[in-house]
View 1 (cartoon, rainbow, N blue to C red):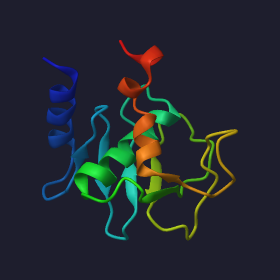
View 2: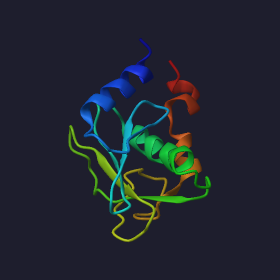
View 3: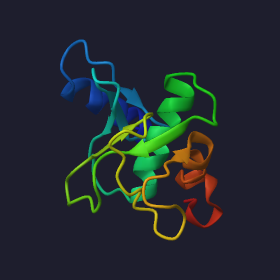
View 4: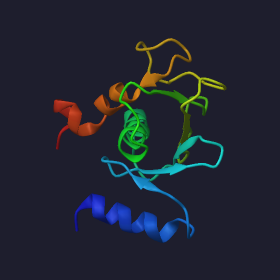
Length: 127
């Protein structure tokens, strides 16, 4: 069974009824929250770029927003083992992005840049 299909099926079984989850192109589940923030929960071995990728994919495909939309990390780094990351479209409460050397502390990134962090977009990470 393809990994993405398996991930989507598992997400459907784990999420409470009525939850509006989105499965990103990299297989991570994205859970929009009532306060407007975006939770990308931990779902197995994933790097920081995978979390940003999932949030960006949700913003572009799930919410149909422009690729120039800025995304901010709200959960302060470092992410502990087994924890997810919360993102927001508002700079209020923004934490350090965790992307060392690329951004100032709380500048956020465009959804387009976040999509570049997806595994398939980086040739050396393709399987």
